[in-house]
Length: 123
Image 1 (cartoon, helix red, strand yellow):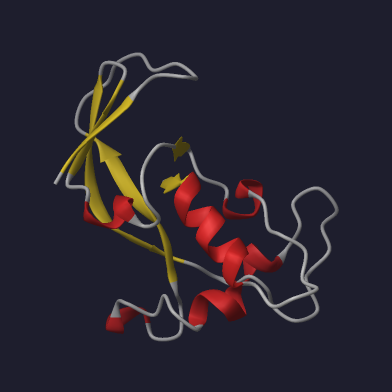
Image 2 (cartoon, rainbow, N blue to C red):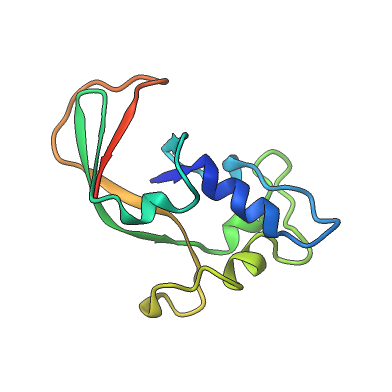
């Protein structure tokens, strides 16, 4: 699962006033991309990280676990950030009320990857 820092910044900008910003940990991604616009990852067909090619299989539909702080285990009383994401990220009709945030990729072959590896994307 891959999310861009731009996407996280976008949801934090849209959270209601007084609601604490969410962290990437709440979405539990395997990969975090930087240097791109919010939700660019939605349109990426393939990504190359280190020696591995990954293929986009679907947008990630988000559930109630995004409302749980992974450090404290407490659930947000107002269902944030899920509530905010539902206001503008219900983009896959088959997902019903589950908003999309991040993209699921599958490895096309095995190889070595490292923290800090460049992420190259194709559309």
